[in-house]
Every structure is written in structure tokens, then in C-alpha cells.
Image (cartoon, rainbow, N blue to C red; front, side, top):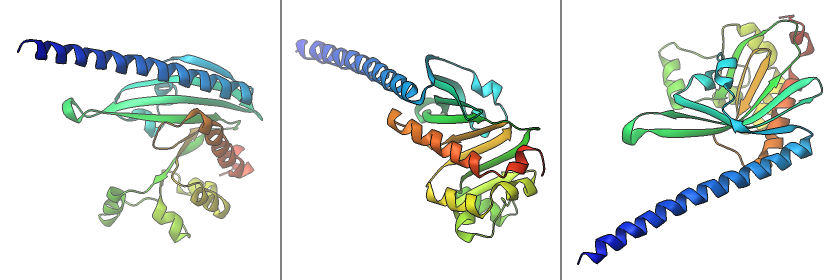
Length: 224
């Protein structure tokens, strides 16, 4: 009778150790794949963490969420006078049984500007955004009804937001699917709502670069 509980305890221990070993294996495999991605891009890979981007870019909404924030697996380089940072990022919300870890793969582009961009956030519009609009907390709406229904846009400088999100930009953002974009100072941040497989990191970079390319040139000179 006593053998069964001991066996179950040992079995549980083997299971836990197996999970830990699997976690180390998958983390090492991811680092190896990301190093290969960095090599193909001509960038450098820094597997350590944390890089404290939440302090450097504290004006971004993403880096103010939750607690236990950490970044790792940094790919960094320079492309067409733009400094690129690609990395894994996570934060936690809730407590106890309701505590949740949120994982993201993030791209930050440092662009050459004569003066800092006003802050703008572009993200998918959710149910609570629609509810808030009913009580007077409106985001910025655009001529495209389809775009205004899909994306929530907020900025203290509405004119700048309209300049950034022109018709061609709206078409681009509608085509790429669900994406989160923030811009402010000299940086543009792009991410999806999940951690991406390494093979999709170049696509995330291309998305961010295309967004920057579509920003009117006069805005980089502070003409807004």
C-alpha cells in the first residue's frame, strides 16, 4: 500500500525534471536559430538579458504593462541609417492563480530625425475601446471606416497622427493583419500579440522598415 504513493511521487519528480530539461533544450534551440537569423541579416546576436529597454523607452505603452519585465535574445544592427533592435520580451500581470506571463517578440527602429516624434500608438481596437467611445473617450478616426473599425489610434498631436496615417499607410496596415505600433522621440516599436518563431523575425523587421518608409519625409525634418 505504501509503494504506490512513493512511486507516484517519483514519477512526478521525473516529470518535473523532464519539463525543466525540455525548457533548457528549447531555449538553447531558439538561441541557435536566432543566431543564424542575425548572421543572415548581417547583425549581431546577444543571447543574454535583461537589456532594460523598459527604462530606455519608458514612454512606450508596452513597457509600462505589468511587472517582472525582462528582455533577452537581442539581435542588433544597422540598416540604411536605421539602428535595429529585435528581441524577446515578457511581462506578468495578475497574481496568484490569475497570474499570467505575456511573451512578445519586439522590433525597435531608431530613425534619424531632426527633432523627436510626438507619441502615437496604433493597435487593434478592442471591445472596451468601443465601449469607451460611447461615453466620450474617443480615439482618432479616419476617412477609412474599415481602418477606424480595426485600429485604435491615440496621440496628443492629432495632426501629426493624420500625417503619419495617410491613405497608403492605412492600406498597408490593413494588409499586414493584427499589429501593434508605437512611435515617439526617435523610435518606432512594432510587435504582434505573441512571441514569434525565429523564422518570422525578418518579417517583423521588414514590417517595421516598411512602416518607416511610408512616413512622409517632411516629418523626419520636424515639419508637422
